Length: 256
Ligand SMILES: NC(=O)c1ccc[n+]([C@@H]2O[C@H](COP(=O)([O-])OP(=O)(O)OC[C@H]3O[C@@H](n4cnc5c(N)ncnc54)[C@H](OP(=O)(O)O)[C@@H]3O)[C@@H](O)[C@H]2O)c1
Image 1: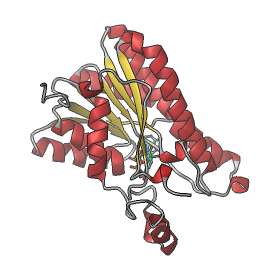
Image 2 (image 1 turned 90 degrees about the vertical axis):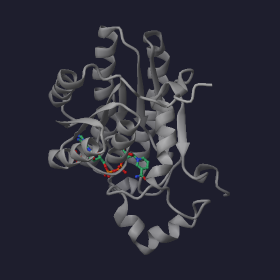
Image 3 (image 1 turned 60 degrees about the horizontal axis):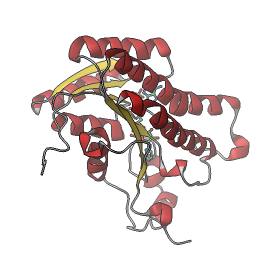
Image 4 (image 1 turned 90 degrees about the horizontal axis):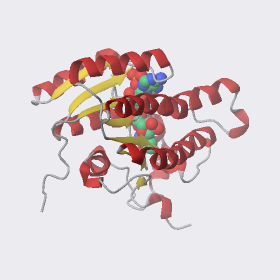
């Protein structure tokens, strides 16, 4: 039996949105699994501190300034990644934003902000990564960040939900086109994990009440995303592509 199934030794991984929350955790996990990790986001000083942590733990990491809404910035980030660590063959397409608003209150600017980051940003970064892998004749694994809100709905999250549902379905479509190049494409659909994106809500009385509706009656911990991420990023999922994997404490199928 191969007990090294989840190893990422020899791989180069790029994590977008690594300056906080899930992305910061994912970068540490990938480095622990042996990958050389490129961490991208706009807040570079936070990335530098993450790189220091990873290096202090014996890993390899490199920070790149990256705005996923800007094509030139994405291209420059991949150039920098390749110059330092070689081709990116594991992509964690994690950068994302939220902007809770009732459907009738969403204005054009909020709609564009949401879609440009959560959907077009995921497309832009994945396209850059996949083009480079195809040109180099190398296989790879892409992990997109969808959400349980890409599979279900909640008040004040209609455009967030729409963006995450689109990421889920783009994952299906990418999987169908890219297998022929040895590129697998899957998505994580996390339930609720307290990060900067939702801390205000979960610190509120309303947020605390909401948590009681999740079957385990608690939020997820970042460690509970470690196994699912490594599964999709590594050869442990060598026969999986097009999967949108909920990690949500059974929330989606909670009792009505
Ligand atoms: N937390 C949850 O419960 C949960 C549940 C389901 C799905 N998710 C998804 O998981 C992903 C990570 O969320 P999180 O909870 O970790 O939120 P977070 O702590 O707010 O982190 C979001 C990250 O995205 C980056 N980002 C935002 N806009 C960007 C841009 N234009 N270019 C580059 N990076 C950008 C931010 O970095 P900079 O501001 O430094 O650029 C930050 O590092 C998101 O896609 C989110 O939708 C989260």
